Length: 370
Image (tube, rainbow, N blue to C red; front, side):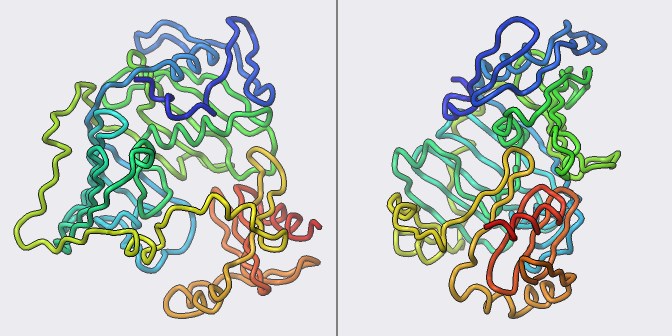
């Protein structure tokens, strides 16, 4: 099946000439071809985008290494490098094993120094497993829910495909798309697509996507901050096999002595993972509805923190971390600034949060906008 069958927003029309018109506008696509220095025939950026869109993937398995150097303080409770906690992937280097045999059969295992954590999707059965705690949680998904990606502890992409989907979804008139030659990833020859924001206010310099020269699926994604020679975020295969994994890889049986929780609707709600109410957006008032300022790579989201959340943030290790952040102020008010390599976040004293892949000055302007 097409890897984009569940992602209609990523479809675009590509004329076989110099320019490409994307959904909503005209992202600049260079006609310069990727060099054939890895034994691959030359391909233009437009041709590579069509290749990725039309790729068919029946199955794969492999080892993935993810590295994050976002330039932010260590977050309490995330475990850090070498941890098998999925939330730890916001920083450090982590190794994962992945298996895929269709949209309803997927498995991801985060390998830590003292154990591993697994997320296994098999039809409508979703299991999460921690070997360190010897605990497992089972959820039964609806047929519609099982067609979407499984929930996880963090929104950090865990595979090259997830990272590429996020990058390709951002294609619009604010993006320049070119090729940058070829590369070898996991022992396979690959083309490299280069996505770059046209707006200099973005903290992101470029996103490099290595596309397999035969299978046309992403093998590696690297995100570079402005002025940096090394990626601030990288996820890529170190070994990959495109044969379909055996069905046994997706059959999970809790080991003897494991504590198993069956997450019913009530327990799911208690964990904060309840399905969103489709009517919530219509009931939201202008005062509490998130405001979006800007477009493309310089989009800023300004939202009102949920009632009572500010007091909770002031407690414990997280509270100490927030209080250590530098104070900032302006015509928009005052607050604390979290400035990373790829994004900035301002938490205001009056309970607002502004975030984006932009400089702090862009956040201040968004907070001041009426």
